[in-house]
Image 1 (cartoon, rainbow, N blue to C red):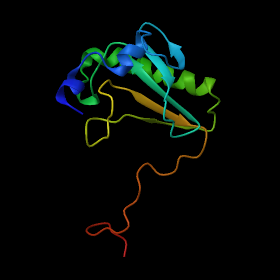
Image 2 (image 1 turned 180 degrees about the horizontal axis):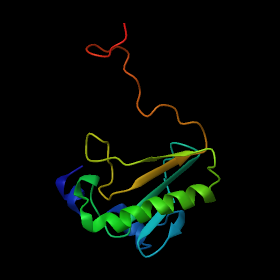
Image 3 (image 1 turned 30 degrees about the vertical axis):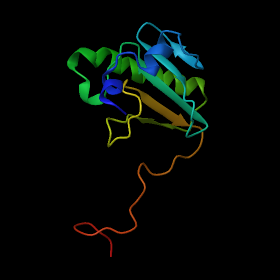
Image 4 (image 1 turned 135 degrees about the vertical axis):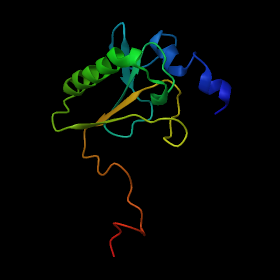
Length: 132
C-alpha cells in the first residue's frame, strides 16, 4: 500500500459510511457504521467503523474516547442481534505488522463458531518459559 493510500481520508470505509459504495450495513448512526466483511473469516464477521476517519489505533487521542466507547456498545448490540450468545471476538489490527489493510480504524466482530487461540503457536520456542 502506498503512503498516499495510507493517508487518504477517502478510504473504502469512508465511502461505505457515505453510501457511495454498497455494503451490507447492519447498524448505522451519526457516530459509527457496522457492516458485513466481504471476506468473512467466521460465520459472523462485521466491521465497526467510526464515521469520522481515524487512520489507526496508534492515532487515537483522548478526543476519540466517546466514539471508541460507542463502538464497543454497538459491537455488543450487533453481537446480540446476530445471536452470538455463546461469545465472540473483537479484534483491531494496527499498521503493517498488525496486518491493517484499510487505514480507517475498525473493529472486527467475529463469531458464530469456536474461534480457537488468538495467535498460531510457534512449532518450537527457545528461551525462558519454553517447554522442553
